[in-house]
Amino acid sequence: MWGENLPADDAPLGPDERLLDATEVRQLEPRLREPPMRALHLRGHGAVDPVAVTQALVSASKDHGAKLIANSAVTALTVRDGRVVGVQASTGPLAADTVVVTAGVDAPMLCAPLGFDLPIAPSPALLMRFTGPPGLVRTLVTTPHLEVREATDGHLLVAAGYNGEISHEDLQRAGEQMLHRLIATFDAEDVHLVSVRLGTRPMPTDELPIVGPVPGVDGAYVAVMHSGITLAPTVGRLVASEIVDTVEAEQLAGLRLTRFHSDTEY
Image (cartoon, rainbow, N blue to C red; front, side):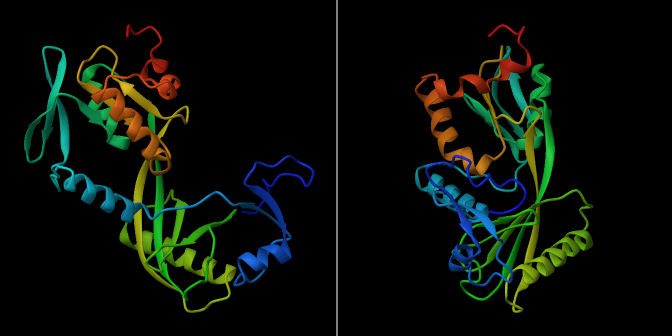
């Protein structure tokens, strides 16, 4: 990682952090065209391929008895006698003892009929894949203009915020621009754009996750956050424990929906 936000040379560092000079950066990333004079190395940090992780989790869930209903959009929550008892989906109604709303930017739409306003804003981002020579990027490289790592399938993954149009042509243009940036950063001409995906990340207005039961409505639970992939393993376990074992997680105490409606009885 390098850029304007690096700590000063005499600033205290975390247990897995160390400042590198250009020679040390070159040892870690020998294909950089111009290694920075200073960079921060976070030895304990890593990255995952979000698409591969999603596919792996879905497959494992099915192996453990979960039922996957693909290509089905949830359009509304089913409420009976003040309690959420299921959902209305494009493929038909589904009953449930507890509905966990993990719909990201669509969560406010689903929760609005319950009388609860979720303050969530969309945060569009691109996930781009490139082919390149093996070992071109050895670590997770983060600069003011680029974040790139190599996935297990050999593709280079680049994530970036996006505020442009969503047409195929505009997305392709954004991918081509990032391709030029990659080639300018790393010593390799044989790099090619494979795909560009646009995702709309949910961003709570106070930038903290929103996790917990919907106040005053039984059977409804919300889990919305950014960054979802980073936090999902821990939050998923805590949410499951709260719902299945009815054990309230202290770690989630400051993330409840009641912080947006302090006068709501809960």
